[in-house]
Length: 162
Figure 1 (cartoon, rainbow, N blue to C red):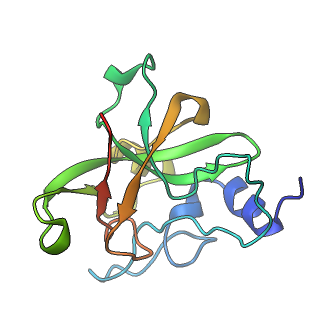
Figure 2 (cartoon, rainbow, N blue to C red):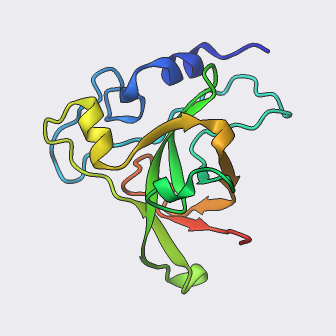
C-alpha cells in the first residue's frame, strides 16, 4: 500500500498537527474569530477500501475498555497516525439542541480552550485530550453540521444505535 507523503507527514508531526492556521508553529493570532484547533488535513492519495480510517471521525470507547476513565461518551479524532495506529481524541459535550431539520436532537461540541501560552502537554491536558490506540475505539455515525475547518466551531449530530 502506498501512503501519501502529505498524510504521513501530517500525522507524524508532533501534537501541533491539529493546531492553528500555521501548521508548523500551531499558534494563531488571538482574535476571537481565529481558529485555535483545526480538523486534520486529509490527503487525496490512495485509500484502501478494506481499511478503516479515523480521520475527523467521532468515536466512542469499545465495550470492555476502561470507559470509567473517560470524561465523555463521544470523542472527536483530532489526529490519526496511520503508521502508529494511534489517535488523539478530544471529548465532546452536549451544548443545547439543534433547530430546523434536526429539531430537538442534541448538539455535540468540543470544549476548546484558548492556548494562553501553555506548553503542548499542558494544553492537551487542560482539555482532557487523550492519545491512544485505535483498537480501543469504535467509530460512531455522526454528521458534521456546521461544516467548518475549526474544531471549536463545529457541531455534530451523533446517530448512535445504543
